[in-house]
Length: 179
Image (tube, rainbow, N blue to C red; front, side, top):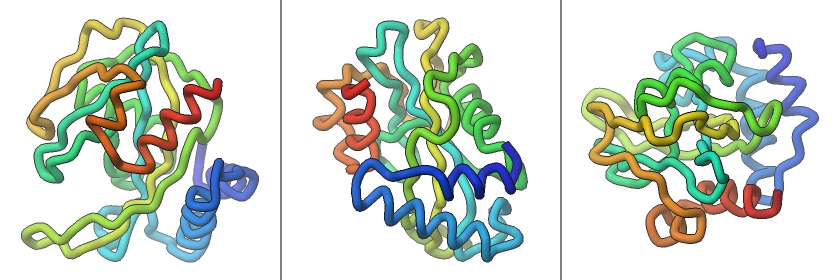
């Protein structure tokens, strides 16, 4: 999906709760007012994409212990100019976990989140405007980590709150459990 399609999808998307709805509106406002929203060089904030990846039985999700942030998160990363955020999410999953064969379980946007990234070295504090997609791994046994993570693991959905207490991750898990 290109920028215009993303704007339309965000306009049509309804957040699952008041918090996600606020993120959606903030993201839509940012996207429609920021010409270089997909570039990391826009230091106030930029678009990112991530994925909640489920195992074949849809009983566990793939999380990684992010090396810089020291938190368990879903795979994802910077758009770096690419407006096709589903493709960005797929690329990030492959780079961070080794999984290349993914089945899209829900067409379009699965979740949205806007979060503040702390300052680090020469990069100031900034926002990530994260569009999330839902996938199932075709071959879940093929996971491998990379330099961005301390660990990569399949986490049973019922154990996610103990491992990754981020509300946005818990919200995605709740959505999966309601499916």
